[in-house]
Image 1 (cartoon, rainbow, N blue to C red):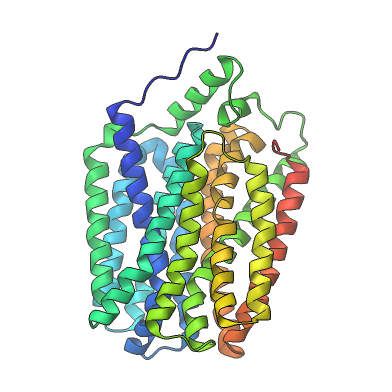
Image 2 (image 1 turned 120 degrees about the vertical axis):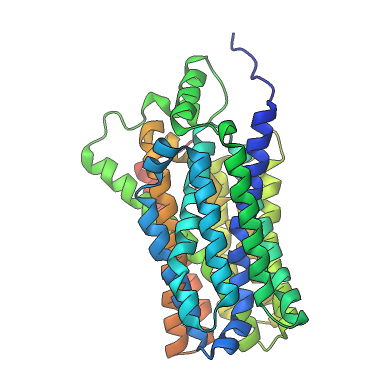
Length: 412
């Protein structure tokens, strides 16, 4: 008979609370930038499409660090990696707040990407390999908390006179996070320990679905070509998924202000609706003892996102468009954590230790790269191009996920 799971220790609770707080801080700048951009570009005298450049420069750091996150965690420990990431983020956002021109924002852009890639990769890897899908959903829910609060923080700062204090507040939060990880470094599990825990769970007998059940090496018997195809398709899915999520969130404010004519305060509330829906659904998925399966969350989330994107393209009414953005946020909410959670099940825990960091890097590249391309399209045409661009992304995402599931099925 399988032994009962031990009650969470004080160290476990500290790790959980720090992880949730870190993901909230990770989400803040993503929610802030799109809302701040109309005021920022006025300060710098920059065209609207240059938002894509900021996102693209951030990608440079995220992609570069994705290749080494796994090794850094093994050598330094996850806590040290997270403390370094918080320090890098604080320096970068001080640069944002003090920037006399767009050139400085672009110069520190790679540093923001490095920080985000280290935070995202380290925590997703550690939590996914401990077989705690509810904590994984809560992590991404707290990312949504940060991204939902972000537009409100920036809107309040703009109404008070300037967008810059919002980034000083963000820098201070990152300093606090870095100090906390440095102090509580002994309470953080390593990926190796997490993998061993998963293996022990699988050997203990029948249990719930999760990484522990994936240690029987699901890729056994696969050809090398199939393994490469699954890993590549996984990167494509994360790339396109985050491109869709970030593009909808970052360009919404510019779209509803420049194309639909909403005021700054109304646009800030609309952006809050998008990130708020993302947050509420993620936290909601973490609350039930028996949540919907990952397969269900991914399949129906992607289908509903097509509906939301289609409504934005159709544009029957301003209120409908604002609600459609919220629908996209709600439908995509559970997809990212579900994709992370099933990675060990698809390819085994050993490969997942490295693959998750690469997936996070692909996600960062997609979020910035696709948003930048949309910015170029907006500059060469108009903001009206956002609707059809989102529709194309949502359809491509559905097709890529269908192909991935066909090659590497997950439990329904």
